[in-house]
Length: 89
Image (cartoon, one colour):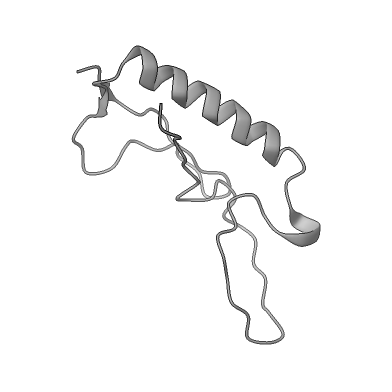
């Protein structure tokens, strides 16, 4: 089975800001970086690999339903999907 990989598209925490003191090159920050690196990132990656891999194995034809954007939870500070409708194929 091929390896599946997915990172956050939209961070759940929205009410923070940082201003760099000098120009920096930004790589992906799905699990933070440096002192802000998520200590549970390896566990989260493993959980995601197992869960998504098992879904792909059990439902190989599963696809997201065609929709403009999946419904989200109301709120400004913390965001996330309310649901992610799928078509089992």
